[in-house]
Image (tube, rainbow over all chains, first blue to last red; front, side, top):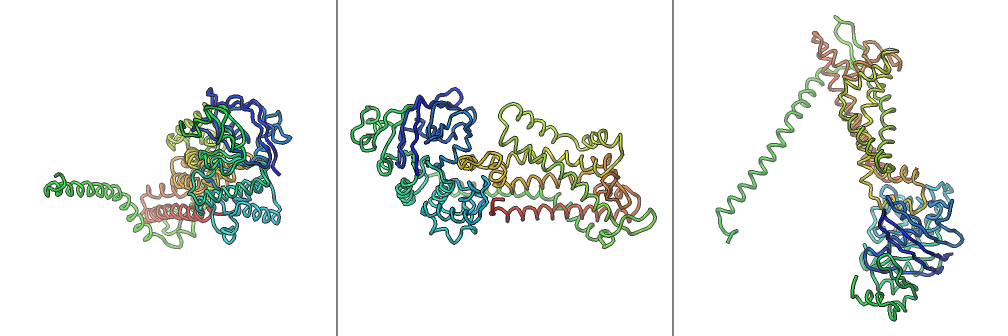
Length: 253
Length: 286
């Protein structure tokens, strides 16, 4: 089941440059929340703070409070590794492990964390590939083909399956369809609809139509600040901030 | 019209052919000495090979026949010791440089590796002589240490370069799955770069397998059978050096055969390692 995320006073830096300023946000469980805004506004940095991936950049740091269900992910004694097992991520460019078969790609998160039960592993791999709508296309080549031999759209669904296999509560998607053709994009969007039943989805997107199609809630970021966060319909029809209106009507960005 | 003039067109074609021919000529000039050495070596080497070369130790001076079986085995032992020392240290340092080092210490390590790479092999031989031989005695182990030290910088730098070629997206994907960094480095980053890292190891191996100078003060050479790590041991380059310098025709013959076998061993090892690496690219997480 998906869980809610409560963000309070989140700041992030790259060296001396501050990328996020005091973000407060309440992300509801089992919903898709879209993050929109012009390039460089901090969208990606924001989602990367939700699984503590931001701090893996040299000189990058973050502070504030991010509560994923009962876990304060920036709390003392919380290991980033544990956070990332509960908050999965799909990246902009499909990034399957090129040295692994399709099966091993999906199983990697479990196997490399010491999971050894082969029968259970088979089940989880099948279930994850079914959830990411890739099973029928790859079931005959699971152990024969490399993950890198699939098409771009298939690779991205493989990456989704890989993220789902560790059974996270939240799925972060950083522009998951921006490197894909329209048909693959449509498949990913359909997928997001199904994933909402079991996961909380946070999706960064450059494409406002996509935000309108898949997300119940939308947040508009500008220069590291959260300008407006509301129901998607409200953001796209009657935004309360002038800057949001300017952005969605295409006056800048 | 510029492109309509027949003279201009002729000029252009001529210039193009001239440039191409010059480039081809340069390639031929580069390849010529290499090919000449190789062909001469093959002709002289194969003609000098016989079964005794692979099965017998050298005969005493004055007797003809004999072989370099002891030196082939000796080279294998010394290179084995060298690899056991050089490969893990080199790969480990390369992983450190690429995956963990940030800032000054990494630069220092990189600089040290580059300097070590430029140190003449005879100097390394003398250093190991002072460390391991002076207070004990010549030994196969000392020879292996000298070769191992020579392998480290090449392997370190090539491992680092190969790991840097692995896209950062792959590392982030692993971190995003909650895989600890050491595990992801070993099972994903290093695995992705396996064939490149192996190529670097092979280059270092090929380079030191022909080294003579560092073995002169360490392994010393041995005309008798010995496989003991703490005793002087024969090695192909040493044997070739001694035999080629000798006044006997039969020893010259053996030196040619030795040189040929040395080259052949290097070619065969690197080819087989490349082959294994290319086959092993798709496989399970171990």
